[in-house]
Amino acid sequence: LAETYLRARRITNLSGLSALRFHPRCYYRPDHGPTESRPALIAAVTDLSGHITGAHRTWLDPSGLAKATVDTPRRAMGHLLGHAVRIGTAGDVMAAGEGIETMLSLRCVLPEMPMVAALSANHLAALLLPPSLHRLYIARDRDAPGERAVTALRERACSAGIEALVWTPRRGDFNDDLRGLG
Image 1 (cartoon, helix red, strand yellow):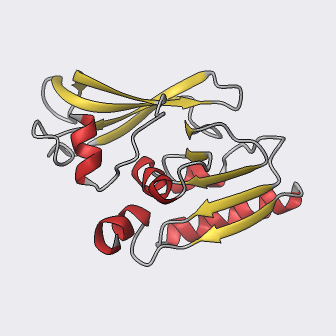
Image 2: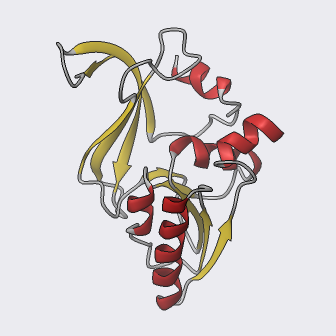
């Protein structure tokens, strides 16, 4: 079902995604009402050493074609600040962005590039950078929080001697670009 969801978002490169799992009955607690069980895409949030510090859940519609129609279809828990969902292992080059789907969209065109999804603009701004990093590509979202996150992360990277280059989507984010522009 998680694979169906990602493919519906035109994300086709699904190999080597050890940070992602599917759970058919993940608990969802609405703001008001009883706890429910729903299918969900689960992502491991890890620190620079690879230790799990948290989890991100995206609850899915039973068809797998969209997120669940609930008030908050995405939630994260645990120690998130500075950490990320990791796709590949960073060496001297890495790409970083906000969302999982954003970074998986970029992975469709850059399959060998190590990437991280920080899960939000605030978390992207606070992302801890690997000591081996020399070049950082920052995949921004095209909104005010995305711009602020890029500015903060770029300043921190540059002050650490890391070359920071910004990628800007034509639409809201790179998954919007992938779905709308190919």
